[in-house]
Image 1 (cartoon, helix red, strand yellow):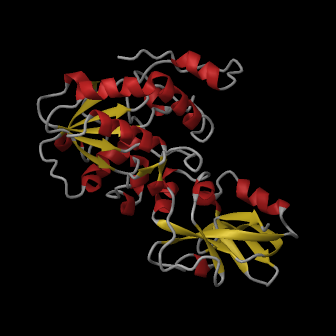
Image 2 (cartoon, rainbow, N blue to C red):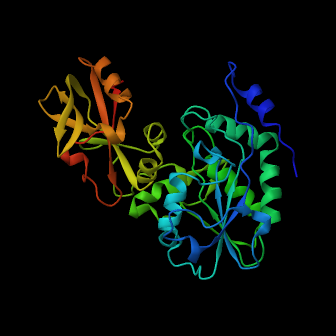
Image 3 (tube, rainbow, N blue to C red):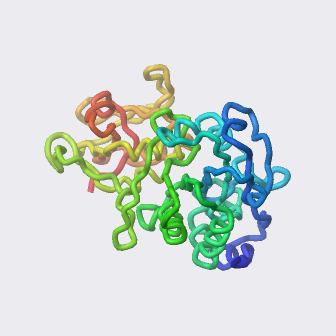
Length: 343
């Protein structure tokens, strides 16, 4: 198996500034049978993946451990992700016959690529650095040592925050799974953190590499949607939009189409306004119309609201994401999700 010096890779990739580094790997584990796991408040066991039973297993692949996974002895999916797996895994598997299966959890990178901070800060760049400096070989070696005939590999990696400029993390992992195990049954599902939303539990993301870019991770303009016509402008690439969202909201974005408003002058910002029972940032436009954004979901750190304040008196556009097949669902109700200076 390819040896990894995680600390050296991190030091070559970003400035450390003397911050402590979690250098323990998070081992691959067998957690019991699905019948023992589903509906429980904790996993019935945590043993090395090599100690799996002879029964077939769902081998779920995640991207890298975060913070909860290093409480006590490192182990995958200790926090909210584990809650979602134990609660919703049967729905995520949908029509797949998983009777009698066990569950194995594997991280593509066993080290804490987030470095213990928000995943938007370091995770993607560290993941990619480790992946190219032995991480891919390490993952493939571990995967081959675990998977047996009859298993189903379930790629639940996130696509990351930088997918608009780089190949999505999950696509890197999927390519390796297909290279190493071309005859093994496999499925692709959203990250379990997004399973809090029922509509994302059985969603299979498409894998369609093209010149190194996974086109399934670019929102495609619906064929019946006009571009640069009418009152809005459809965005073909929602990367910049999705970057600030959490995992659940990013999953929602993959099932949506992004629309830009026509340019207009931003007149006023109203903060902490109650709209339909939620605290929102409300913007007032030059034509007298108002648009609102639920801040707890789409602006928890206030970054978009602060950006809007700097744009008062200028011509701007706002974005809104409507469900595919249901244009106008949110945009016609005055919602917005981001704001841009009109160029």
